[in-house]
Structures are given as C-alpha cells and as structure tokens.
Image (cartoon, rainbow, N blue to C red; front, top):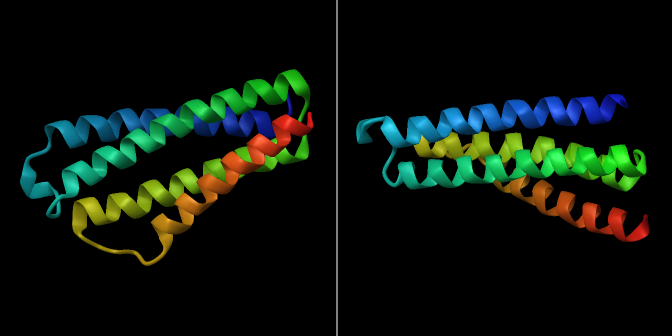
Length: 125
C-alpha cells in the first residue's frame, strides 16, 4: 500500500476518533466550558471533521483502486490539513472565545479546494 494511502487512512482513523471524542464533549460538558454560542459551533466542527474523515477513507479506497494519481493524492492531503486547521480554529473559538485569525477560514478554503481537486482527478481518470 502506498505511503500516502497509509497516511490518509491513519489520519482518517484519528480524525474520526477525535470527532467522536469531541461529540461526547460537546454533548456532556456543562455550558460554562464553552464561549457564548460555542456548543453549537463545536458541534459543527465535529460534524465537519467526521464527514471529512469518512471522505478521506473514500479517497484512500479510490487511490487503491485507480492508483495514486497526483490530483487525487493532493486532494487527500489538502483535505487532511484543511480538516485540522478548520477543526482547531473553530474549537479555539468555541471553547475559549479565541479567534485565531485566518486558521479556520484557511482550513475551510483548503477543504473546498480539496473537493474541487478530487472532482478534477476523478473526471480525468
């Protein structure tokens, strides 16, 4: 199995694990642990993280079936980095009210670019 596929599957598993943990925290922590409106914000971040963990598993399967095409490989790596940036940025805001600059928007932009590259990679294959 190619290294990039192993990395993406490893990352997807950790992202799913931490999304489940985040889901438990956002459900069970008292309101005092969240900034104003933070619980809903944290739920959104957890959902985005889980959806992208599942998407990375799908990308990995696609790469195994069709080979590691550059567009699809880059899409997977961008999705991994974008997921971290988005989730961390939103988490900092949700729990501590810290607005860490362009971290979450940059992560969201990377996620959008990853989906576009995936579409291009699939149509070209």
